[in-house]
Length: 253
Image (cartoon, rainbow, N blue to C red):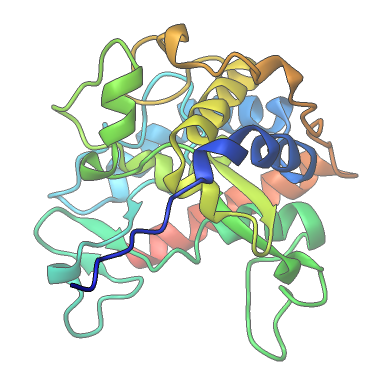
């Protein structure tokens, strides 16, 4: 009789090593930038409410310390990808569906003071940003918050976390080829949760406290890359927010 053979999954044995590497090469938005956006969002909320689609609920985008850059935007689920769905208003809930390009505007402005554009003539490659992948630290859909429900004391399931899709502090920059562990490995994801909370406090919609029993014992061995403040960052961010104001006014017109 020919026996079956099972290959062992040894990924757990290298989680610490992977976390040490990722900590040294991952770029987080500087807390000063996140705070500046949060302050400006308080001022912008009234304007957004006056222009957004009548079916759009602003609460998932404007919450305590929200640094959501593009309120109204979210990723679609598969059944919503019909017709010309990209960057158009989804009439059912008044949100704007996007394929993950709009979070790039944050880094594009910080790098080159320009809106994101790809392709041969775009800014993404000349800026050097095409050497990186963008990764979300926290899930921006309820069905993506499986681990959050396990490691946080409370997860509010009554409100969608759509604002985290373009939350400046929730989008990190990781060199290409290194981002997958932040999607699928529990210990590494928890390390990124902890790092986020240490940098920005709890500015994440619908989450309670992180249960520290889930933080790996070796967490303090990680030497995190310190967030950088690019030159003229405030001018660049204000230009980004002006771009978003004009874009959303036109899109919701």
